[in-house]
Image 1: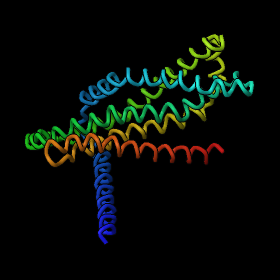
Image 2: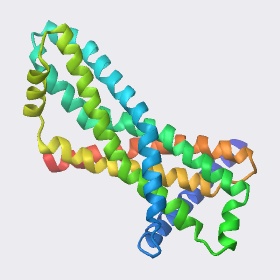
Image 3: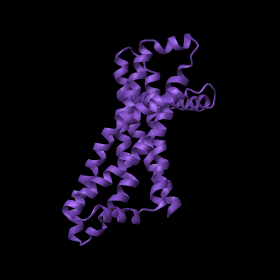
Image 4: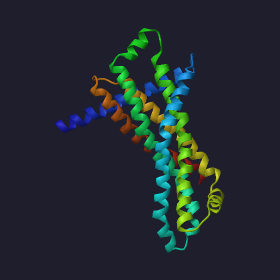
Length: 259
């Protein structure tokens, strides 16, 4: 009986939070097109998110390219298919591995930062002070951050994919004596618009999800200073789950249109 009560309570809380998040999303689109437009804050957020995440994304992408190639090469050698390495690695990284890994990294790096920053502003009553002074805190704090993550994540994914393919080319250059020019010629010969365009579209949704959940958790932070850590932690967890759901939907829809 107690277990059933906990299940009902958890399901009820889930529905309530889903409704609040939906309302939060609707308010974003309402505020997005209403002046004033906080362009200066938007560009500042773009710079902070992109610049501070660039090194982490670069290192991660480079290691992914190295490891993926080193792990795949022995298997391809057994079948005499080492020449397929550039096409296999590039398509795998650009279609799936690069976007989802970069998005997860940004969820941990950017999403948690947004949740902690807005959460601390909420518990120290800075957001309340902005409302009293006549400033729209939602417009200044939330809209700019969600737009910034939506714009910057595709750029970070593109950069991370390029670094990952460069790491793979380095392994092939050392292991297989394949020149960089030949490797990248094979990469571009194997890629098609059907590989790049759907991936690019879904990265915008990845960025939107990271900014939305991070802002939602931070903006509605409660329970004092302990809630700041909870907001940052839950922002990462919920965003990671949402990213996998978006990725599944994107792959499913892409397969329908391109099959």
